[in-house]
Image (cartoon, rainbow, N blue to C red; front, side, top):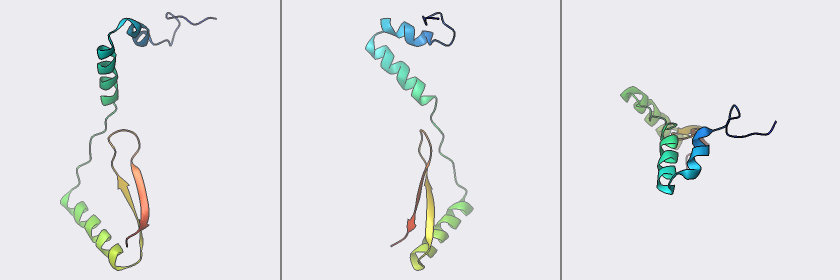
Length: 84
């Protein structure tokens, strides 16, 4: 069966975008991206102190640490290594 804009699963929003101004397409894409933005987690003071202690310890002793870096879009990044 040949696909057309009435085929189930087709994206009617994108079909209609052929007749949209580029500025409107750009704004629509921006809003679509913002819908997937994650909120930055708030750390309690106790959690901040624990992280600080672990970083201080790793600078004193040659221990490997893993840090999770927050990213607003997509997966958070994990960095592993030794402190110099």
